[in-house]
Length: 65
Image 1: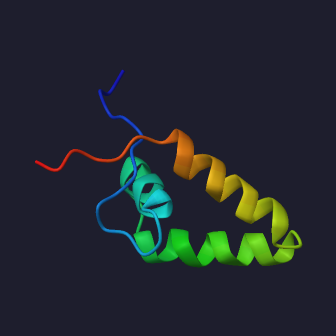
Image 2: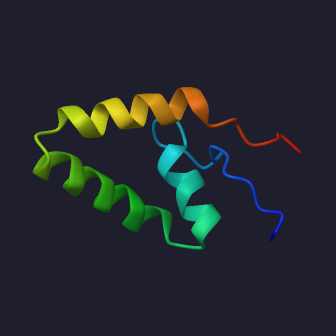
């Protein structure tokens, strides 16, 4: 394993979920956020919001250090 863990980012707009996913995969956080919003809108919004809330609760926060 690479030793990386999926955590919420401290560079956050709402809860850091998209920022954490972007950091984990090495992607640009702005592109992940835009992609997530577009995907949520195209899927009638509710599933995207529900998935985001679940990830917010399940993903641990990044260390403050």
